[in-house]
Image (tube, rainbow, N blue to C red; front, side, top):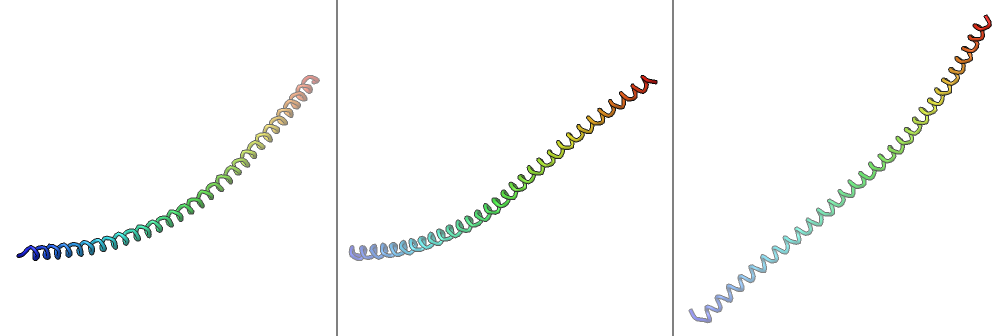
Length: 114
């Protein structure tokens, strides 16, 4: 084998290696593009799910805030009613005590004059 034949054989082998490398590179580029497209699709899908979940949570939070506000209002109303009943009970007790004192004075006067 001559030097020229050897050089041609080496150049041919290098050309084949270069072609195979180019094919593999192109195939890897396509796979990378596919993976990036899939990642982008997955990210968009996850963002939509997160947005939907956030909207549901915000609605629930608004509902809870509404219920808490209503509960505060109801507790205030009940507290007012209880305070009103206590005032009414206090007035009734005062009237009863005053009536009992007047009755005791009348009984004492009757006993005194008898």
